[in-house]
Amino acid sequence: MSLIKLSLGLAVVGMTVVACGPSEPSSSFPQPSSPRDQGGSHVPLGDPAPSDGAGAEGDFQSCATKTATAEAKPVYLVFMFDRSGSMTANGTPKWTSAKAASRAFFESAESKGVHASISFFPDQDAYSCDASAYRTPNVAMSALPSATLGASLDAQVPDGDTPTRAALGGAIAYAQEVAAGEAQDGKVAVVLVTDGLPDSTCTGNSVAAVKELASTVATTIPTYVIGVGDQLTSLQEIAAGGGTKSAFIVDTISPQQIQQDFLAAINAIRQAAVACDYEIPPPPSGEQLDRDKVNVLFKSQSGADPFAYNPSCSGGTGWRYDEPEAPKRIVLCDASCASVKTGAGEIEVLFGCATRTASLK
Image (cartoon, rainbow, N blue to C red):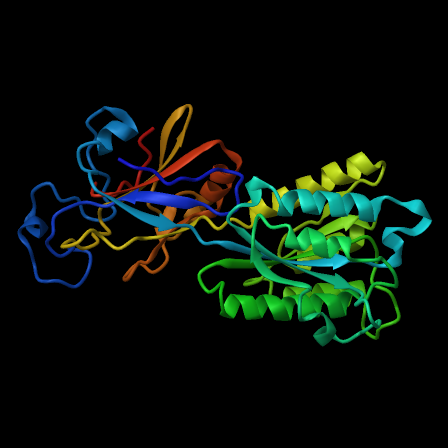
């Protein structure tokens, strides 16, 4: 039996699944009738298989024998970074500390598997209220860890005001471009870093307008907000519009606190952006996928906890297929996904044993 290498807390997860079973066609798809469709040990989709009393792992030992490799959806983060004058005004350490924390993330081994780009607002050459001025990132989408994004941060000199709506518009346009291209099989999100309110220089540059803009793509490209300051209510509104519920507010009491809180916010975003969505690998040569014989377990120090097959995700727990009639991916329901992200353990996806629809505990 093999396992999905899910390092919980990392943004991108590789997984190994087990695929096995007879080489005959699956009874789950339109196929001619086969002997096992008529009875025997076959358990139709939706019926829990009998247990041998050996627990979750024991139940699966005899029927999961072959391995294949698959990967979870990669994560692509589009950073739009506030470089306005208030980030350094009156000697505040906001810019220096946020920059150090960002570099620590971009260059750390923990960021492996994440892709990120970075842009800044206002634009350095001329204060622009046009989203097109912010569409091309300073550093295009790059695999992490990388020193390139940190070097771009080092090259910035904070100055000017905050054309937030235009900047977010540019970030969204670029995120859509990435989503339609290299990230077609991934999850794309915008990360807006700012220390203040949108200014009044640009027409329509209000909190309400920024929130509305974020909401237009929230279902496909969420906007996360890191607030380096005390504009709690306004930034919470933008985050809510972006579909991420609440902003991450960084305390500015001290340089050490800023850096610590900022890095914690990035790590939380990375974790939140993980899609509990796993590609089903092609079966071994000569075999066909049997969707009646797929099981998903979460393994931790306390044991193996099976997730029930739950095609409607009612109640939020369990797992489902992306397309029941022609599945390509396994998707954890929201509550089960949340438990996996916050726990310490690994996921096993097993093929070859009759699908369980009720907890074994």
